[in-house]
Length: 100
Image (cartoon, rainbow, N blue to C red; front, side, top):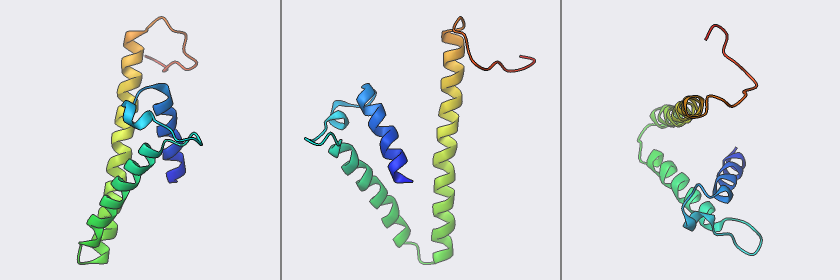
């Protein structure tokens, strides 16, 4: 699953939406700074769960963290769709909300 996140972040970096630090690639075209930052963030989140004394609490905390991350992503998608709808109302869209 992490490979999908990497491809999405890599496409975002190539598009110029991330800071220049994350856009730099090595000789093989791999954004090494982006991978290192992603690895550090994942490791820190994983280490937090090592400090929890009970496995059950660590499991449910990790599930809750994943749900929060995906919830934030969907909220951002909704806000982006609303922004595009009102900023560019004349663009022909492939789907129109019924009764709206």
